[in-house]
Length: 311
Image (cartoon, rainbow, N blue to C red; front, side, top):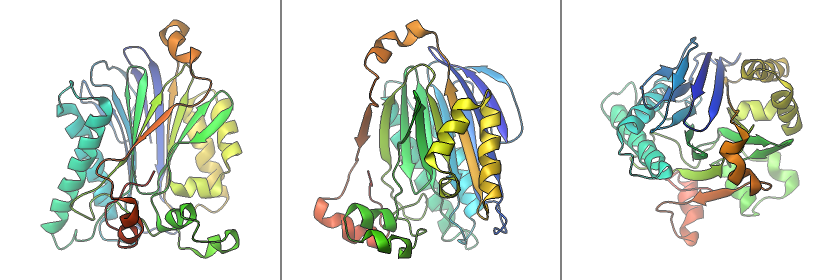
């Protein structure tokens, strides 16, 4: 677990993360990172400290190695290392969303190359949900089926959509509601490191005072209902307490899979967000598809697990 307090240029941000092995897993193949991209300081294990971050922003990310596949724990750790290192070195004249996209693509390329040079790592891959906070904005990058939620004004909104075969079929209306449970939930459309190219889905969010962003394993969402997540996050005095309560509730209900929870809480002076809050009654989302395949190609490529953006 890790706790990190970050003072951004306009925002005060507190973040905490927990990751625990599931009862049915032989390996802990999940990883997370909380990074001050100015200083290069990372939190990937037990530690607590205050940091000042300004120009580059702050990175919060979780990754889950593909269950049952080769070296999933290696892939998830490499994803955190490559992602944060790349973001620290990209030029600041780029938009935050462009920096994050490039960092995800570079991390994918490096994991893929590592797998090609070792028979022990062949086939490794990982999901990735990454949050880059810069000034008053946040950008999410999604590959796979981990989750990101925004908790704002007594409302919990899922920001990401699972990049899975099951979700693809639901979106296409190809399955009836009663047949939904029969669709395998663990077949992903894309994952980091399993192909030489990847197409992350990017989501931009304008931040408001007291916003909270929750990154978590899909296993947590399987055990804890949305209204329970919202209640726990909003009522907890500390982000660490909220993460621990979410983890304990999921485990009480049979947490056989690895679980990771990362919570980011904003607490800024009202005047810092006056203009944003005046326009923030409704959630602002902008989804980007980079190099997406034409509509007619989406279904075929997804079934072959080729890289493909899923909004």
